[in-house]
Length: 235
Image (cartoon, rainbow, N blue to C red; front, side, top):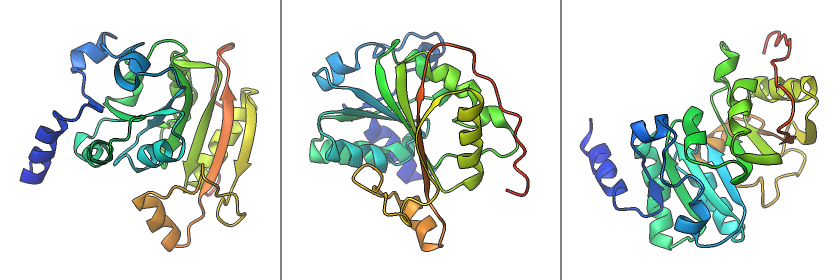
């Protein structure tokens, strides 16, 4: 392991905005922040919004800057990457941004039922070969239901046309309420304050001429979610 990464891991311990529960606590559903994010971290009753797979935390940080009356939590397992976001939040004293080092499939161990109002999924691996690993699959949506309020909004921003179309098909198949679907947010002028945040990777995708897509939908708690019969063809 490189010296820089070791330094980041050590500095991560000093950030009050970065929570790193022990795996045993997460596995057993005993994370001390569960149900206490607004009380212990944010000291307010504002809506809690998650970014799953936040990486360096660029989207979490910028959304917190732009929407001060919401609380944003970036979730990822890569502590060396989250160091960047946690350091920015600490240096700039951004009060409504925090981070959780945790595998996404165990996120329900850190959040109570209905504790989360919205979920952002930004540029995840499309996982073309195995649907259950896709962060918008029925497998993961069932997990999100455990902490997302009823009819809470899920946002997907991606460069993957494959994942965009798959998620649209899943929404249709499960009769979920689609709020918006856009297959080229910059080409259509849709990139407002909510969508115009550009991470380093997104900027690279745009420089290569790739289109950035976006969709959002409401996730209800009632009813079983299943996978669609979907043929991606040559995607």
